[in-house]
Image (cartoon, rainbow, N blue to C red; front, top):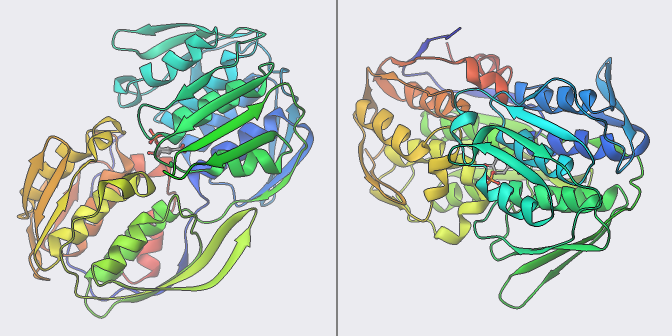
Length: 438
Ligand code: S3P
């Protein structure tokens, strides 16, 4: 059921919040634990719908996954031990669950049908079908390489060396996961570094994995298959992609000052924070530490006058999910911002370039859509007109980004459906209320 909500110009945001666990790390923690032999314990797991879809799928393939008070306990089946799932695997809205689990199934002697909601069923799976088919899996997809699709895994699969045609951590991880149960060495060559949680965590679980980076920054990740994973205790840091919304709202609303504690600051994820600082945003990183093999910090954010920016396309992979809310920041900045080289945004939960261009235009912002990006003329700090109803197209990040736009709009902005927010940020509206948003 659609849950509409309206947001309008807010008084200052003040206080301290934490955000839920990192979505990417949570998926991986469950998957790797499900392949280890013995009990893993996960603290801080994101209990969003996407991650729960991963947990449900892993259970139907034999893993035991239980929540006991605040921690999650996983008893894995061992690499090669996944069982034939009986019902179709319902991936809901989650591209990460789908693509990574397709990799897992591909090198097991099982067959799985993947289904999902309308948003997920429109997303391209050819990017994983191609390498996994080369490894020997037999994949039958709906027209355009989409869901519903069936993966008939093969054991033993064939190890491959695969150069990623797009910067995608999901494709990289799908191949590495397939490689876990494949004899010999599977290699992924990554010309542009995408998030590296799989590499970090697989190494922690005892996988034989190496990463070499050449002088041009091209990474080669090699994994030796048919190894055993050792169960781990994992602490999941707060999600920098979720912290992005309170960060931008704080920068934009005059008088605001907010601390967001325990945020993952992995370089392959933290591009937004760099760019916002270059725009003049006051974001102080304190208490930098390492938690579960990942850098984590507390962020102290103050309202700041922002200036327009043209980020280098090379940084896109480190902030690909954060562009929608960055567009909102640019809409209030002083001057023009130009975002290019981000065509990948068109194949996320929605076409995020087109959807944000329409939503911001309807709210009175001056934007121009480009095939590979967006130009935004900022107001120099003046409120947007607002007054629009935003179509979120089952996309959580559109809903949350346009909520932030509502907080800096003269007339209320209505979000047609906040329910997709539950995929990644349960408690989003409570976080805003805790900071004083009425
Ligand atoms: C993710 C990778 C990214 C990102 C997604 C999560 C992951 O997708 O947009 O939200 O956990 O690996 P791509 O691999 O398609 O870039």
